[in-house]
Length: 604
Ligand SMILES: Cc1cc2nc3c(=O)[nH]c(=O)nc-3n(C[C@H](O)[C@H](O)[C@H](O)COP(=O)(O)OP(=O)(O)OC[C@H]3O[C@@H](n4cnc5c(N)ncnc54)[C@H](O)[C@@H]3O)c2cc1C
Image 1 (spheres, rainbow, N blue to C red):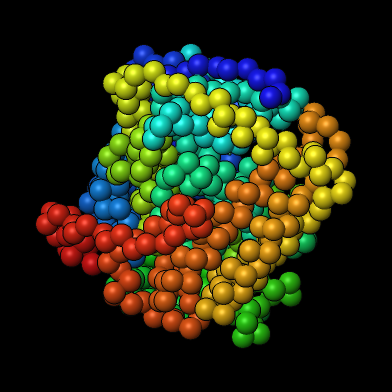
Image 2 (cartoon, helix red, strand yellow):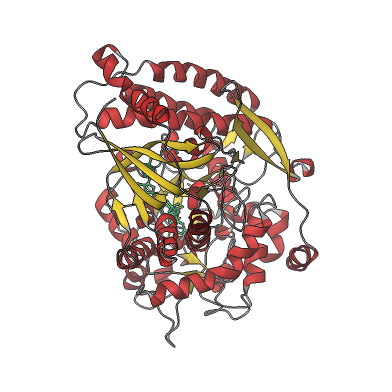
């Protein structure tokens, strides 16, 4: 068929965000030849956008914190659908991963006695997020990137993987194209780590970058792996809503961690109106106590603005639906009020939240030290993902590993803020370690030429239809609008049935998409190839959401508004059936070991 180059690695890591880089560093440090593929430039992966911090029970600010509290918080936040082994490993290993990052050169904000400073975040009982102002992701990526280069990683930038390759049942590499010239590259590898991030571009309002088209999820699914709990999509409560061009851009939870409060049109702090039963004992019941908590008073309980994201997002939707929203369909987030409480208030806000200050000043002409921000929910994170073994991160396909946002398990039905960056470090390291071990203990792989040819034929098909085919952008736009309207924050049966019908039609339209021009930096072509991935993840979300006839975590059903204990005993798993159709099953959650069950009971 067309020209191609073949490149050999022991371990191929797809994705250069926090998870991919940490995996690659680990694999390289164990003596394997590691290649990293990324759709964008090194240093530009989505992780760079992370703001608030990385969660790790280091106890630097509150010495009552430890891995047991972090474990219990993560399980409570995930409404007990979490892979408890992952939640345990994550809570135990996150502090070491953060310290290691510091040893590699990351400069975190400091306590007065020189330790890593930690801040409050939703759902975390104690101040736990190590941070660098509100630019933590930038520092993390910079550090990992520098360290990775020293480990001798071979980085293939602006290169998109279109299909995974097999040697029998085992993964044998990947077929990719370089975005600049459009030429194919074949990667042969003994083990592959997927670290491709999330799926936010399946929705029209999102905080996620253009890279988030669910590639890893879909590549794994097509390669025979299982996806888990895809109904759980996190809608972050605070995205910008005005002007329209910036809708969806994230407003970090750090604003609320620093004392920011949510108010409706009437100036009321509506979050006090409805505190879920399982958080009541930990939540302040008056404004004064909430403020004291944000200022480090150990005897105070957290303000209701710092409840979990799913709950806060639904409370905002309720205010808007009941006519108490802001002029552009959201509510107000006010940090300016703290000026009355702290010396040099305006400077304090700018120092603690420099990116937020600039973001609102430049994009919305709002000075957050003087005026409240107008905010509303935005599609932010996917808890569902590739089903992996909790210890090794290997998927259900031999030799195929996954870590970071594209993997499932740690967060259950809802992720706590800050638990993603720690997830990347803890499970990135584990994925790299076990992928290296797999590569070392399993022999060479043979590539199947017919599989490569088929992948290239599929990738080039849109050019054959040229201008006679439909525009990829139109199909993408229709998909995003439909998902936003029908499979969004509040769901019901009829909407999801409608969504599945629409997805069938959109799949047919995607097969007719045509691309004019040539292969050199052709965004229309790139979008056409993204469509298959977006459609697969959207179908998985809609199918799982239809089946989960209850409300839990990030999944809220208008027709089943309560949590049903029967749905707390299994995970949803989708696989590609022999007929090519998506098949959904229930996988029972293994019983918690007595030691972990006791921790949860004790911290209730
Ligand atoms: C604005 C914002 C702020 C956030 N703040 C925080 C925070 O403060 N704390 C926290 O814990 N979490 C935060 N999150 C979430 C967190 O940033 C992400 O979940 C996390 O960075 C994902 O990292 P990752 O390594 O899994 O993926 P990414 O960093 O997204 O990296 C994915 C990589 O995969 C590559 N890729 C994808 N598809 C392909 C393909 N087909 N071929 C080749 N390469 C591919 C991409 O190019 C990229 O290099 C935030 C998210 C957003 C949007």
